[in-house]
Image (tube, rainbow, N blue to C red):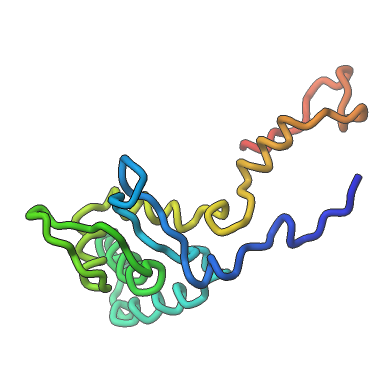
Length: 166
């Protein structure tokens, strides 16, 4: 067994986390593709996002009861557009006019197209995009590795160990 550094499993490309990565949001690749540039959307790696959400939630703190789903979603979208969304390429309105990148236009776009927001949020949360292997990569690697001769339970056992899927 080789010694593997902690960074090999948990490290990220800091420049990608800080500067962002381009995410293709179009059905085709190439220069004309609609792309968004996003920073990493994990709170521990991007505390500015958490701080922004906290600041945007301030006006709602004295409100009694739970916040509506709509308010929570809008706050998350605003924070996303302020901290995570960095830039875009080839964003056009229905008339074919280029949409300038800014926080306000980003929010309008995310609010109008919630599926786009969900898609790009997932991409901004995917460790693979930021130089870190995801759990899926590790699961795939484990499936493709040669099983060891020793196991934690034998065929004589009545109950197999619990699966990690539950």
